[in-house]
View 1 (cartoon, rainbow, N blue to C red):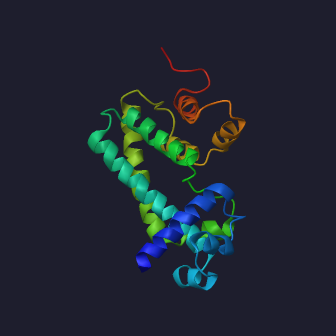
View 2 (view 1 turned 30 degrees about the horizontal axis):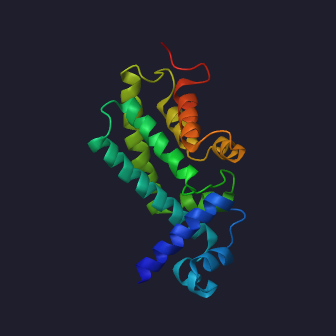
View 3 (view 1 turned 120 degrees about the horizontal axis):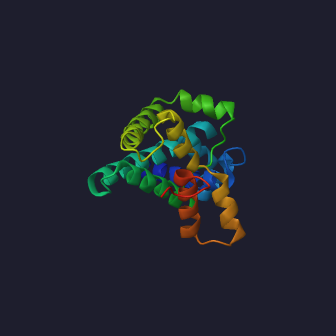
Amino acid sequence: MLRSREEAIVVSVNRLLAEKGFETMTMDEVAADVGIAKASLYKHFNSKEELAGAAMIRVLERALEQVDVLERDGPAREIDRLKAMTRWTLDLQLAGEMPSLPAQNSALRNALIANKAYLDRLMRLSDRLGAWITAAQSAGDLNAALPPELVLYTLFARACDPVLSLLKVSGNLSDDQIAEALISTCFDGLTGPRR
């Protein structure tokens, strides 16, 4: 029961972070959304930073599972795996399941840096995607002149790209069109694919 309640809390936090962001989400909102007393929430998580950390760990675990799926059942070429992984993160955003965390919030950043479980998963994901990036660069599918770390951070940036939400709100494109356009600009640039 305890594990089930914590999972419900993390799911709620994940959604609230996606909708509102870290700054405006409150512990009161989380407790109300889950349907528990605020005091009960504090029995599971001591702070908003701890809640955000749990939500980010959950996203990283899901991302690592997706990497496993793509390696086992996905495309053979690493560039296509990277595109599929990027599509997966965009689909999570479009579904309101990707937390929106500020890059400049020092309290949250410090809490995440101090969270060993978060850092372990982040490093595992970075290493696995990094291997795909260097393989795609070796194959000539990604610009080999770019540092692999820059490519990795560019792909991570797609997971919190504000352009996605602006395009969604405009209503001019379907979710599929938004995802495909962002993947195209990410991998092909603004000039389009090379022939």
